[in-house]
Amino acid sequence: MSYWLGIDLGSTVTVAAVCWGARPAEVVMLGSGSAAVPSAVFVGEQGQVEVGEAALRQAVTDPDRVVRSFIGRIGDQVPMVIGGQAYTAAQLAAMLTRWVVDQVTSRLEGPAEGVVMTHPATWGDYKREVLATSLAAVGLGEVRFCAEPQAAAAGYSASQPVVSGHTTAVYDLGGTTFHATVIRASGAGGFTVLGRPQVLEQLGGADFDDAVFGHVLGSVPGLAELNPEDPATLAAIAALRRGCTEATQALSADTEVTIPVTAPGIQTQVRLHRAEFDDMIRAQLAGTIPVLRRALHTAAVQPHQLDA
Image 1 (cartoon, one colour):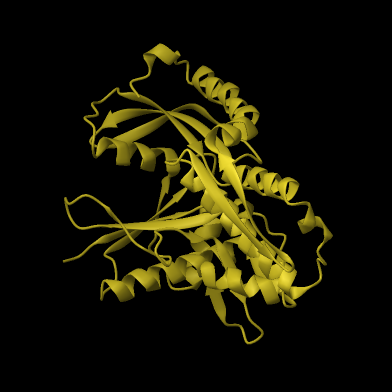
Image 2: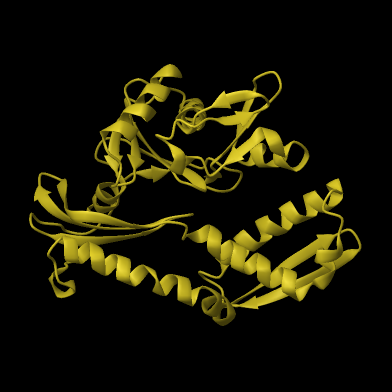
């Protein structure tokens, strides 16, 4: 049975889902035990490409050949140099997308009938064209694009009744950027953006991970005394950062987490309560509210007029 593939290239992680006909979409397990994979690309000396978790493992011993946080630079023609070779952000995004498509094709034993990719609502024709050109260069010339707020609304409408005129505010707190957009259902499953989408740069989940990492550093002073050039230290810090990210995710359901800290000469753990974490990020989250209000203002919509 034919299927459609949807891909969301995030600034920190990438996810995908498939849909067969009228059946609900199903998220694809791209990572080892996880639906999401890190948006990271490794390019080896012989031109071999690894992405996601495999790329991050290479970062411990060969950090100059691993690049992250490039999705936000799509459309920027200033190249990133990896091992002496220049790549644009769009080319790196195309490598990551090609890998996702190949993974899904292999698991489902056949190619998708079509591929849809999401993008920020603030993107114009230029950025879409730049990415489309790079996708075509890796054999993905028929990819369709969908703005993230419309994609979010479509997902919402799959489980909730949405009628024409239904007005929704989309609060999109990503890995590194916050977007606020107001959209209105226009019938036949379509959605129209009202006003101007608003953006708060440099705020997202990565900042919350950093807050937890800083908390651990403050709790274990010995970490600051380690040799930063020692490969064992680099590996330990990389593992600790992953542990901090897992802690922020776990606190969505748990009231307390324990973060293991293992480094040369150090074997301990740090407890973190959800209330402590809330205090760490409260000021940053408060900064998103005026941005959401600006999106409502540009759309000429009052909060009480929102349906969702």
